[in-house]
Length: 344
Picture 1 (cartoon, rainbow, N blue to C red):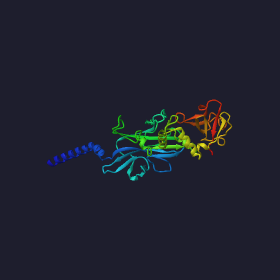
Picture 2 (tube, helix red, strand yellow):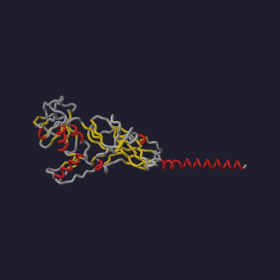
Picture 3 (cartoon, one colour):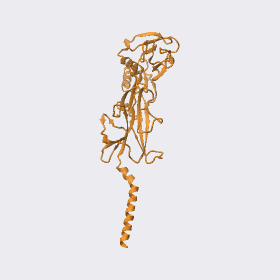
Picture 4 (cartoon, helix red, strand yellow):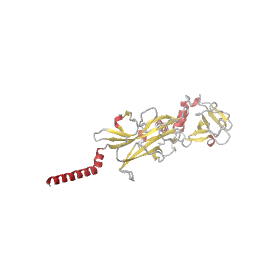
């Protein structure tokens, strides 16, 4: 009888231990799991093989992928990265493959993607010695997939895009509010982290490269006769690809053709019935102007006048932010415009 009582209480003790273990295991496991620290965005260009946190340069039409990354530290002090990226490079350092892992934990994760842009497409300055004050914002993209790895999203076929990700962790799928949220660099970090900020720059070929790469940036225009410090500030913002001004873009468009402004030959042509054929008389990257209004020719419009230059054709206009518009919206009427070829 005594032996049976011992066995009975032993079974009870084991059962209690099992139940306690089952109840406490999630908390124990939580303490054993690596502690998340920060989110990152890595960009992958096909053929390169190594997704990177930083800027990538792409030709128009070239695909890319975005990878969310969650950096964590385990109980031994080792850093690892939750991601679906096949490889990873951060700050020029290639992360060893054994430190990459897919999400394998019990918490529910939501991956939210954002675009980082200037708060306004156009910022005019009134004073010759003004100091440009740029603001940036994170725009949630509800139309993008909520996944660790997604195709690169394009607002337009060319231009500059910057990316931000937030990784939210919850105990259950039905939780309305996440228990923890981890963010990659965002609007606040961009001005200082501009060199390494996750960015895709998509360029058209030839002289259209500089002209097309500024789409997505704020245009900052100085007043007439700006002071030298303001010109230097604008040049630095343009170098960092935080903003652009019209003259700097046109300068680079001409330089991409191996020319200088003083080497351009301008000739007057009628916009309506010019007789200039695309590919011989005119080409993408050429300039048209009336007075101080200068645009960059983009392409022949569908339904245009049989492949010749006409008002329906498209141009890049930088009057109040970079836009693609028909020539008829810039040059009204049937007067003459001046044309400069960048073919040399």
